[in-house]
Length: 151
Ligand SMILES: [Fe+2]
Image 1 (cartoon, rainbow, N blue to C red):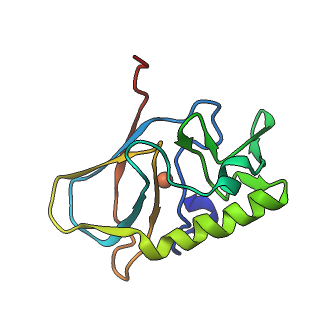
Image 2: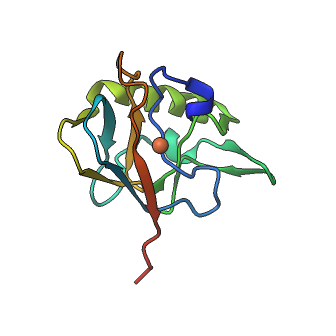
């Protein structure tokens, strides 16, 4: 994502969308405060509240090993990253507009204290980084990803 957008604002996305099984939880950790917020849009805690076309539209996911087809909501989880996913039908193109529109209702997480950790449910939330604030070019977040065992 950073390789494509540099210091500019990133679009909302889930991490690991190029993986057949993306991580379930993302932990972002900052040992130092940062003036650049992380943006989070949270879907329903029980099932992603996305329109039917976002569940039915087909995306092509490009990976280093080839490509595969998928929907943006698969098995109760959201998978969306406009860098590696291209809409392959009209419903998926509508879904791109829907996911873009969610930025207006997303919340900002401010890294205003040292040693903060932000846990993101990567199955039901989209996240992004605001444009890097002036003077914040050396900001550093560590990221850990987790897969939860199925019960
Ligand atoms: Fe990310």
